[in-house]
Image (cartoon, rainbow, N blue to C red; front, side):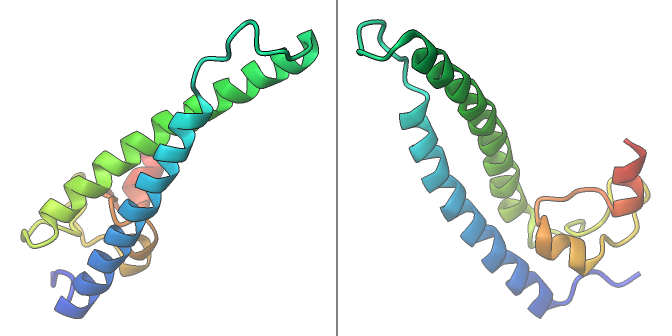
Length: 115
């Protein structure tokens, strides 16, 4: 079965590079938001609890962003290898549509839905 065409790979490479750039900026901003809230920062008790809740959400987003950044960097390293764009489960070609949206994908939609 034919692998991704050269032009498709270049489009996906550009998407990966854009996503890496955007995620790097997002991670930098999130790292500022998750810094510890000092007990003497003058927030009321309720506002402090809200700030701590928001901080927890930002920590989860930060963790997910770091994982995706690692996967995108791995995809960028694999893009010129023959198995790029091939599902690691069924070994069928991963659709160009999926690769355009989630270029770090290593599974086709059917196999990803089985997880």
